[in-house]
Amino acid sequence: MIELLTVVSTKKVAVGATELICRMPEVKKIEPGRFMHLRVGPLLRRPISIANVEGDLITFLFKEIGQGTKELASLRPGDFVDALGPLGNGFPVNLIEPTSRVVLVGGGIGVPPLYYTMRKLVERGVTCEAILGFDTAASVFYEEAFKKLGPTTITTVDGTAGVQGFVTAALTPERFDTLLACGPEPMLRSLQTVPIQDRFLSIENRMGCGIGACFACVCKTPDGNYVKTCSDGPVFRAEAVIL
Image: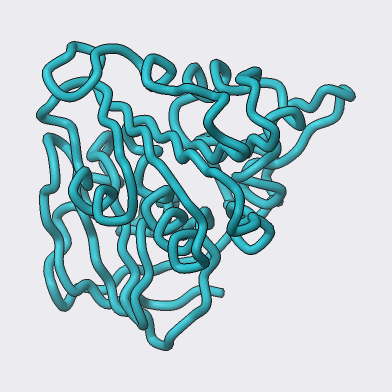
């Protein structure tokens, strides 16, 4: 479904990272882990994960990498955003038992969808912890927001904030029943074999159409077939894909 979102606010939350809050024409029930395909000007749409939903307000958080995201970051209150979605299949929040011990692991721009996911899990009474990985202290965002939901550990590659190293340096698998993760492919690959019973990975991939028609975002499966990140995912069981 294509609709126009109205920009409410834009804010820099870290070096090169922007929070964009928009108002939807109507209140929607949006599952955590899904995304919107946003268009700015004549450029191709950009898949942007959903960081939060409150009533008719939807929050996106993204890094300014190319021309499209730079134009999104330049929007001002009252501007409109052409949005397709919500798209994809998100995290199985409603299938996770309140007795489960859940760890959410995010790397860089893979962190935003985990905030909404953790919030919805906590609302269901699920005990959650978060491990969030960044390059350096200047790139850390949403730390306090996550800490309001549950124990949160920050890791940085250069050691300028939190634990030095990658997210795996702070992960103790034996303490958890369920892993929910989103981030760069090397990080997700390192999490595919951790000894946690249920592991779900949200794959970041380049997309064309966002609706499964163009085959630009396929991912190979162990049986030799392919799945589409946009329509079959972006969330998959860790053992269901080859990264």
